[in-house]
Image (cartoon, rainbow, N blue to C red; front, side):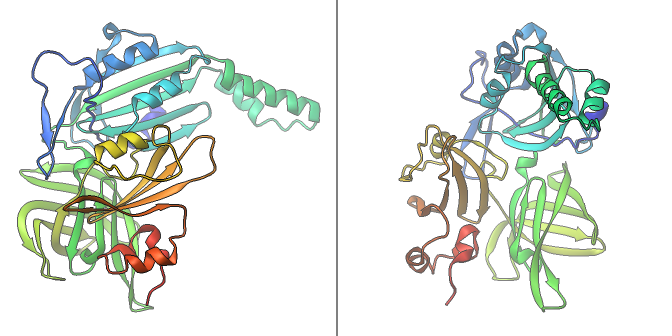
Length: 391
């Protein structure tokens, strides 16, 4: 536990409405800005669906609060573990399937061990795994200065056996976000106003913004890590730090706002302090499903965002998505498929008539497409369309 305590814990949300294990009681729901609701499942119920994959039962799940440096206090939580899983059990694949469609955060790896945090809806889950081995003996072999080539090969084979033949330990710990401790996924906003808000984005654990470059008299894009999320009354608050700016603290309130840059109306007001300097602007809440770090099967993503026009070369049933980027009504998604070198980018816009396809295929975007969508607001400055020639 000592090693894991050094890894930053990020709050998170999870409810998997399609998983079984619901009771007859009414399932809680959350609604987004568009009024769409998502049914929530509590941490214990989710772990009950995972227990058989770890050769355990619901009786093996124990109450244990979820806490960390980014959480103000503790979250209600539960723990499930197995310290003796056979190496050929396929457990990692089963866990990957269970967390399909979740946002992956805080990945940490050591010799024979790993730590991953996942977010979805109202849950946060950490997965800690390690190979059961003798650390001292393994380290001695790993850093041996043996000169004999045959003995080197023998040592290499022995180390390989440790990772492929030794048993494994898995620990899955899930907690539930609440009003006092909202999920980082709730902190997905585009910011507007004077610099740096004319091109700023808050996406859970990162704040991207523009900053003046005194040498070029232009603006550079920079970003910083956000490590705390919470509330103060009805105000969303977050904090972070940047080495050249000092502490960063932000507040977002649901209050009508007109930005000073373009005079557009927005539903939120924002205030961010960079060191001793305070900037004020407006904000729009973004879809917290389409966020960086979410990974899963393409077909499930298309169903979630109601997209029916994929005509690419990959099979949506087995293709995987990641690398999600968003800006306003635009979204870019990177698609891959196991066993295939072919990869694709999908760039979509959200219109009154549904999702519009601006590009699906490899890069770069061809000249004809660049010219066709030249007038789409913000598209030429977004994702792979940045490579389009400017007139």
